[in-house]
Length: 396
Image 1 (cartoon, one colour):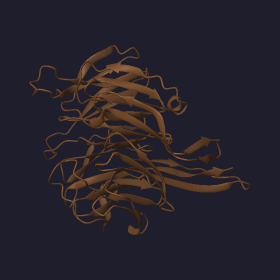
Image 2: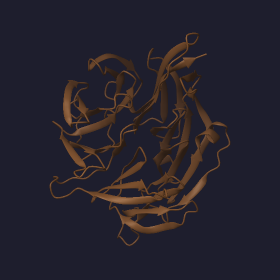
Image 3: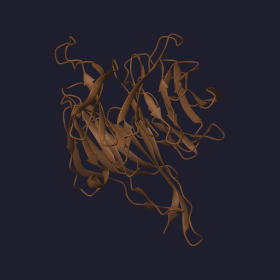
Image 4: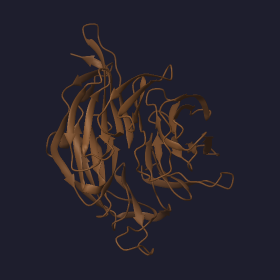
């Protein structure tokens, strides 16, 4: 899992203007997350967990959620970066990073969905989601709201105004012993957890993302879009792939924060630019080899970055769907083998793309303007999952 939180602003003449970026890197197999200062490369903290963690940054950038699926727990890391909006500028407050004592236990946590000031944790083998306030977590007083998704399955619950969008398991499907049932669709729940309307078909639902006031979900049939009606209730619409697209599907999604569109995978060697308002919502970009990871730039809104298994990093213009430039970033990392074998992951950190290189125990920093490696940061063992948090503001 990857991400970045951008903090911008300007300072008055009597204030210091500062930019800070921190990387949070989880090891591939060891139960540890490291916090690293981007500028100096210094390790700011090493946090021992129970198991391997996938990482997700909150919308504010104040916390990182370390989801340990195989060990039934989610830990929270305070990033030590906080911004406060003052209208004409933002203040940036920098403090120590820390592992919070509060942790959230449940059977097989997988998704950590960020929405506003809240996070929703879904526990597959419970079929339930826990909605929590980030600020309550930071104050050591979290109170979870439980959303019931009917039965255990590999699912997700996404807040949508005063409603929830919840995956629906196919309980009639034949499953192997101890296996979870497949997903057949999505339903809308009210604030009390009661279903509103019919279940929308979304076979094998996987992948979700926010963009503006829309939420997208990957399905076998297409991408299902949730949008608000005039009375702010969720309306569901399927963007079918259609006969013109080659065989494939979207199962991982990223959403633009400033423009209304989504970026998704499509098969092994393509990515899809998805415009929900267009009569032809899908634009496919062919990649030279299979995709390893991809990311959107939160500041350079037309930029997307894709790393392919030949070790090439590609800059894609999302407005016209073209590969603008490519450069060697790592050695080749084959997609053959287990899906969770150690391979590079990307995060955008200010003027750099940070790429984990588990084979060489490095984080490589690619300058976005020159598209060349500026430097590397040595990280013990096998750096894998990575998120970047930071930005700039006035420091008092």
